[in-house]
Image 1 (cartoon, one colour):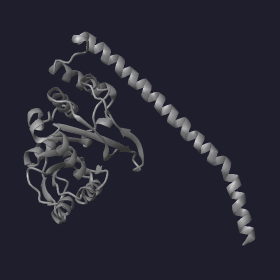
Image 2 (tube, one colour; image 1 turned 45 degrees about the vertical axis):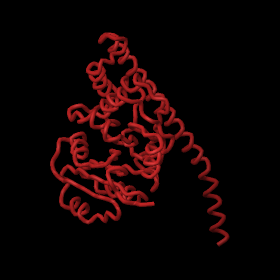
Image 3 (cartoon, one colour; image 1 turned 180 degrees about the horizontal axis):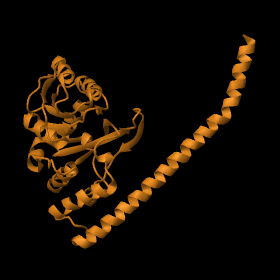
Image 4 (spheres, helix red, strand yellow; image 1 turned 120 degrees about the vertical axis):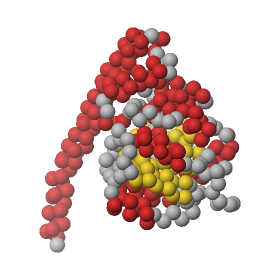
Length: 291
């Protein structure tokens, strides 16, 4: 099979980066080992000479690499720049430090699109903790517009594959709204329901912009979006506000319960380990005596 890259088969991967060379190296290893060629576009927020040197020395192999390193206005500004530079038929925004699940993901995505001609597709994403250990699978196999608009069920943008046609209709990203990716997905959903892909496409780490924000701030941005997109819950601003308030409080309680359960689990594991320590020590002593 021909491996020639052209506008009919190309996937463009756009990576925004800033002062995270280690993360960019992880992402580059993931992308450049893909068995099908891609166009990779890195938009760096002027991270310095060492960063630019790494980009200059990248061995693209069969892939196409484009990069820009300059001061920008943040993540969504970088994503807009990347889209403007891209030429691919299908586009993925993969953050610095995020990786593709294996070296055949791009081939699988292209095969799926060629077979079903979807407008945009959403894969499964595995969330990693700060130590790189998987702890959650982000999935939403039966999406609803109401869930997106409310913010209780959203997509992981690192696992979304957009066709150029639909992305041109719903962008640019609003650089002043930290929920701009949700707004783009809501607009896209109103055009066509996404194809949900039952495969893990992406690994991403905790600590992104959205994970650092309080629920109330995120819900406030989403409420603005619902007003703009005429998706108010109950049809009125007052009922929308009340429902949003209830959701925020419910999420806070759920998060507290989850944290308590995690703490109890960790304590249980620790106590079990502590009980075993004297036995382990005695065994070690016996081993020393034998020596």
